[in-house]
Image (cartoon, rainbow, N blue to C red; front, side, top):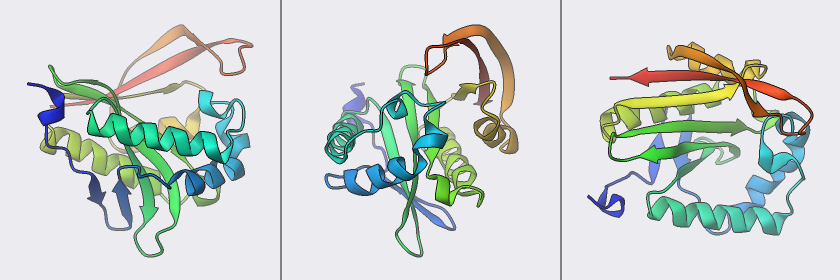
Length: 186
Protein backbone atom coordinates (compact mmCIF):
# COMPACT_ATOMS: atom_id res chain seq x y z
CA UNK A 1 0.00 0.00 0.00
CA UNK A 2 1.17 3.50 -0.78
CA UNK A 3 1.88 5.23 2.58
CA UNK A 4 -0.01 8.33 1.45
CA UNK A 5 -3.19 6.24 1.76
CA UNK A 6 -2.52 5.43 5.43
CA UNK A 7 -4.85 7.33 7.73
CA UNK A 8 -2.78 9.25 10.28
CA UNK A 9 -4.20 11.56 12.92
CA UNK A 10 -3.02 15.12 12.44
CA UNK A 11 -3.78 15.93 16.08
CA UNK A 12 -3.57 13.97 19.33
CA UNK A 13 -4.52 14.99 22.86
CA UNK A 14 -3.37 14.04 26.33
CA UNK A 15 -4.61 15.31 29.67
CA UNK A 16 -2.49 18.48 29.42
CA UNK A 17 -1.25 18.62 25.83
CA UNK A 18 -2.25 18.96 22.21
CA UNK A 19 0.11 17.39 19.68
CA UNK A 20 -0.48 18.49 16.10
CA UNK A 21 1.03 18.42 12.65
CA UNK A 22 3.14 21.51 11.83
CA UNK A 23 1.34 24.22 9.88
CA UNK A 24 2.62 27.16 7.84
CA UNK A 25 3.24 29.98 10.28
CA UNK A 26 4.42 27.73 13.14
CA UNK A 27 8.06 28.60 12.49
CA UNK A 28 7.89 31.72 14.65
CA UNK A 29 7.00 29.97 17.94
CA UNK A 30 9.27 27.04 17.20
CA UNK A 31 12.19 29.38 16.49
CA UNK A 32 11.55 31.36 19.69
CA UNK A 33 11.75 28.12 21.68
CA UNK A 34 14.95 27.10 19.88
CA UNK A 35 16.49 30.53 20.55
CA UNK A 36 15.79 30.33 24.29
CA UNK A 37 16.84 26.66 24.50
CA UNK A 38 19.84 26.67 22.19
CA UNK A 39 22.46 26.00 24.87
CA UNK A 40 20.63 22.88 26.06
CA UNK A 41 19.84 21.65 22.54
CA UNK A 42 23.23 22.30 20.93
CA UNK A 43 25.14 19.32 22.42
CA UNK A 44 22.55 16.80 21.22
CA UNK A 45 20.80 18.03 18.06
CA UNK A 46 22.38 18.79 14.71
CA UNK A 47 19.86 21.49 13.82
CA UNK A 48 20.98 23.46 16.89
CA UNK A 49 24.67 23.47 15.99
CA UNK A 50 24.09 26.87 14.42
CA UNK A 51 21.14 28.87 15.69
CA UNK A 52 18.55 28.88 12.89
CA UNK A 53 16.94 32.12 11.74
CA UNK A 54 13.16 32.50 12.00
CA UNK A 55 12.96 32.10 8.21
CA UNK A 56 14.98 28.86 8.28
CA UNK A 57 12.72 27.47 10.99
CA UNK A 58 9.62 28.45 9.02
CA UNK A 59 11.01 26.64 5.97
CA UNK A 60 11.74 23.61 8.16
CA UNK A 61 8.22 23.50 9.62
CA UNK A 62 6.67 23.83 6.15
CA UNK A 63 8.87 20.98 4.93
CA UNK A 64 7.75 18.95 7.97
CA UNK A 65 4.13 19.65 6.98
CA UNK A 66 4.79 18.27 3.49
CA UNK A 67 6.63 15.20 4.83
CA UNK A 68 3.71 14.54 7.16
CA UNK A 69 1.26 14.59 4.26
CA UNK A 70 3.55 12.23 2.32
CA UNK A 71 3.83 9.97 5.42
CA UNK A 72 7.63 10.17 5.28
CA UNK A 73 8.13 11.76 8.70
CA UNK A 74 5.33 12.54 11.15
CA UNK A 75 6.34 15.50 13.29
CA UNK A 76 3.99 16.73 15.98
CA UNK A 77 4.36 20.11 17.66
CA UNK A 78 3.46 20.02 21.35
CA UNK A 79 1.29 22.74 22.92
CA UNK A 80 -0.20 23.19 26.36
CA UNK A 81 -3.95 22.58 26.11
CA UNK A 82 -4.85 25.25 28.63
CA UNK A 83 -2.82 28.15 27.17
CA UNK A 84 -1.84 27.07 23.66
CA UNK A 85 1.82 27.72 24.49
CA UNK A 86 4.40 25.78 22.44
CA UNK A 87 6.52 23.46 24.61
CA UNK A 88 8.41 21.18 22.23
CA UNK A 89 8.52 18.94 19.22
CA UNK A 90 8.27 15.19 18.83
CA UNK A 91 7.24 12.74 16.19
CA UNK A 92 7.79 9.59 14.19
CA UNK A 93 10.99 9.27 12.15
CA UNK A 94 12.74 6.51 10.20
CA UNK A 95 9.38 4.98 9.40
CA UNK A 96 9.24 1.56 7.78
CA UNK A 97 5.58 1.06 6.85
CA UNK A 98 6.23 -2.52 5.64
CA UNK A 99 7.10 -3.91 9.10
CA UNK A 100 5.61 -1.49 10.42
CA UNK A 101 8.09 0.21 12.77
CA UNK A 102 9.32 3.69 13.53
CA UNK A 103 11.46 5.82 15.79
CA UNK A 104 10.31 8.59 18.13
CA UNK A 105 12.44 11.71 18.45
CA UNK A 106 11.85 14.74 20.64
CA UNK A 107 13.16 18.00 22.03
CA UNK A 108 11.82 20.28 24.72
CA UNK A 109 11.83 24.03 25.21
CA UNK A 110 14.12 24.58 28.20
CA UNK A 111 11.70 26.88 30.01
CA UNK A 112 9.07 24.11 29.94
CA UNK A 113 11.25 21.21 31.06
CA UNK A 114 10.76 19.46 34.36
CA UNK A 115 6.96 19.21 34.18
CA UNK A 116 6.73 15.78 32.51
CA UNK A 117 5.29 17.20 29.30
CA UNK A 118 7.61 15.32 26.96
CA UNK A 119 7.13 12.05 28.82
CA UNK A 120 3.37 12.56 28.47
CA UNK A 121 3.70 13.33 24.75
CA UNK A 122 5.97 10.34 24.05
CA UNK A 123 3.65 8.06 26.00
CA UNK A 124 0.76 9.19 23.79
CA UNK A 125 2.81 8.70 20.62
CA UNK A 126 3.91 5.22 21.73
CA UNK A 127 0.30 4.24 22.39
CA UNK A 128 -0.83 5.70 19.06
CA UNK A 129 2.00 4.00 17.14
CA UNK A 130 1.04 0.57 18.51
CA UNK A 131 -2.74 0.87 18.67
CA UNK A 132 -3.52 3.41 15.96
CA UNK A 133 -0.87 2.66 13.37
CA UNK A 134 -0.28 -1.02 14.14
CA UNK A 135 3.45 -0.64 14.66
CA UNK A 136 5.18 -3.75 15.92
CA UNK A 137 8.24 -1.81 17.06
CA UNK A 138 8.74 1.71 18.39
CA UNK A 139 12.31 2.78 18.97
CA UNK A 140 14.01 5.67 20.76
CA UNK A 141 17.70 6.33 20.18
CA UNK A 142 19.75 8.77 22.21
CA UNK A 143 23.30 9.58 23.15
CA UNK A 144 24.44 7.60 26.19
CA UNK A 145 25.49 10.85 27.87
CA UNK A 146 22.09 12.54 27.38
CA UNK A 147 20.58 11.52 30.69
CA UNK A 148 17.46 13.71 30.37
CA UNK A 149 16.59 12.18 27.02
CA UNK A 150 17.29 8.64 28.25
CA UNK A 151 15.00 9.16 31.26
CA UNK A 152 11.91 9.33 29.02
CA UNK A 153 12.00 5.80 27.54
CA UNK A 154 13.14 4.46 30.90
CA UNK A 155 10.11 6.06 32.66
CA UNK A 156 7.79 4.64 30.02
CA UNK A 157 9.01 1.06 30.33
CA UNK A 158 10.95 0.85 27.07
CA UNK A 159 13.58 -1.89 27.01
CA UNK A 160 17.21 -0.87 26.64
CA UNK A 161 18.19 -3.33 23.92
CA UNK A 162 21.79 -2.25 23.82
CA UNK A 163 24.34 0.48 23.56
CA UNK A 164 26.15 0.88 20.28
CA UNK A 165 29.75 1.70 21.19
CA UNK A 166 31.61 4.28 19.14
CA UNK A 167 28.50 4.66 17.00
CA UNK A 168 28.45 8.32 16.08
CA UNK A 169 30.40 11.54 16.00
CA UNK A 170 29.37 14.14 18.57
CA UNK A 171 27.46 17.14 17.23
CA UNK A 172 30.53 19.36 17.72
CA UNK A 173 32.64 16.79 15.84
CA UNK A 174 35.16 16.51 18.66
CA UNK A 175 34.65 12.95 19.90
CA UNK A 176 32.99 9.60 19.21
CA UNK A 177 29.78 8.84 21.11
CA UNK A 178 27.75 5.79 22.13
CA UNK A 179 24.07 5.41 21.19
CA UNK A 180 21.46 3.78 23.44
CA UNK A 181 18.71 1.86 21.65
CA UNK A 182 15.39 1.57 23.50
CA UNK A 183 12.34 -0.26 22.17
CA UNK A 184 8.68 -0.88 22.81
CA UNK A 185 7.35 -3.90 20.95
CA UNK A 186 4.08 -5.78 20.59
